[in-house]
Length: 205
Length: 117
Image (cartoon, rainbow over all chains, first blue to last red; front, side, top):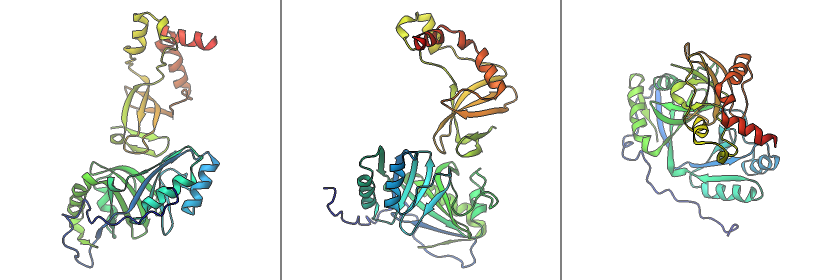
């Protein structure tokens, strides 16, 4: 069973924002760019980082070591790993790859105390980008995201407009990935449109 | 409003935290040997001090880890934040911990006696 080839999961075509994102586009000189990262694979990985075997086996699967610095993330072309706690990480995969990654991690960690949970459909990722992205986040979140203390590679868990989110900064534009529960996604999307209205919002596919 | 320093995540708004009540309440080692009155000290009696207090907090919206805080209930000054499995490190914290009535309660007396055996 463990070695059986798992079919790549098909995009069900249903996302919590489907009913909201009907019009794509907007002014080119917008201050805000919004898009949904549809069906990104999301796993919650737990284990003891002081166990060398755990760190070794996970780095074999992910091709890099899990981040141990609080509120940071590491990524390569395939996987993004966000620090959530001293023994907990969020591992994102490309859409459809989550079952394969879940299997690979479970096989690699057979002899190690660990847990891998597929939470892909629990939440969705909204990507907020553009020169005014920081101003928009600052309207609804008390965490300090000034470039003096918050840069690409940094992440945090907090509340954005009262919705609990996991957020990480990808680049210097700046671009932020905002992971939010499916049930809060439409509310947060509307809130972002409203908060970004003064800067102009372009919705991307 | 409080500005609390989570041991993992750093300074965060108090809206991200939940309060967990008094810290360092030890469960009686041998509850059967306590009278109802003595057991009620463990179960119901809580410190409600004006001034320093040791309390537990959890970073609900962040790393979801528990930790202890030494806070002054009059000024809301947070003097010390330390891991939940440790005793306070600061001088004020040590003194408060030692002088707390709970150290003399039957619950802890029996806990310590049992541990010595």
